[in-house]
Length: 256
Image (cartoon, rainbow, N blue to C red):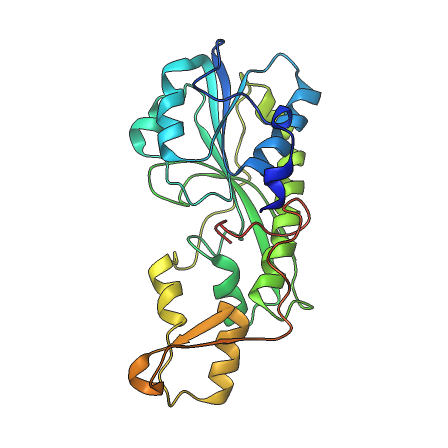
């Protein structure tokens, strides 16, 4: 059982279907992060009406109950809000991306590890229909020199992303406030899940140095049956566990 399943239901914002008041903020993220953000918003402004959506279906169900000032907030989510849903929020959508502006797209920590980056970051930006292309509002850059795997980078990025949210929570809670950009622009190639999956499949004659580099960056690799006779998975023995407390570590199904 995931640790977040043991959290009391009262720590979460109300279900969009059962909410009777207009929704001010929809939290598009997993349950632990929704509970964390709901607690922060409740401290800032207890009058805010919050709803949690962890699926695209839940997001669509919330649209009919939006207040005239509603905002959408995503946090390291793999759910892509369509243009029609974004247009329904009078005060727009905002997202917390678990990578720096030069690593847009999916699984940024893996590709940064593979590239041997010494610095990494997290990004707060406006949501637009195209993923990771909205105006950048805030970001934080930090050293990852002591991180030898993508998982270690992702854990550090998760912690910094939570801090970046707290730094911007007051501005997000002030629904009539316009949040201005910081002038930083997206750069680099936008990565995809398909690219990530492709890097986990290796030929039988791969160079040992390249093999270790991929294991560090992509956590585990899959070697095709045609090369080894049977499916074979390889994992570094020193990888950190994946079932840590999600507010201190990394939830399994997030887009890091």
